[in-house]
Length: 269
Image (cartoon, rainbow, N blue to C red; front, side):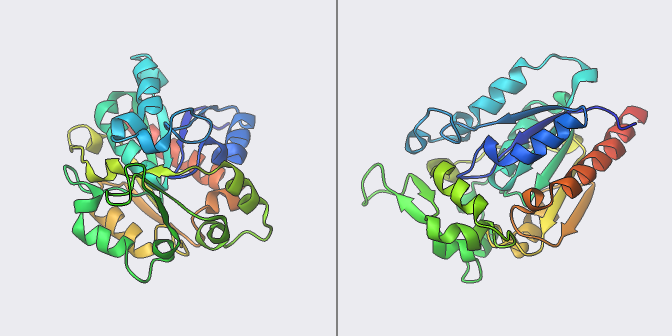
């Protein structure tokens, strides 16, 4: 019988907790506890994205949740983050390493410790290269006026299929995303936070790469996974940015096997 875990699921930029709907349903059916959170200004969270300036503000729902978790080794959670949630994973692992048993980075974005994404020159160059389809799709919002830096970005409906859901046969996810996606706050990308080997580095973690990703491209994933670990494993899967939604049963099987493997290692250490 599969061990029961508490999975905390964190969504990518412009999306929300709703992107985990099929994963949450399957994990719960398998007997696991699941917490899927909206970041501030995402999903149904009431904040205005253009008013958010720091990672602390954006990640506040997750930070508050982890503050509320009991200090009990038997109640550690499995932390799972997709895309821009890579920043949240690093921040949470640094602050709450004693409450996290294992972490999974899915095609996740992360800049160097103490370096903002905008100042992480090699990664920023890869992300904004001509080979990155998402670079040409992004649209900006200027809450402080067009003469100031943009305060958020979003993807027009016409780009959603190619950027996020290219491997989906139907338009269902495109229609859903067009109704539920919200702008992603940008000011915080000029700020940095520090994560260390002593805390962040002590949580066993795995990085999942998607080889056909048009959002956070394979070269960018390769850069992050090779530079910003340590990762116990780097797993490459043939698929696009939302492959976990395209193949939820396979993803659940992988998630459960990894949790069993690395949480078992932790308990036997």
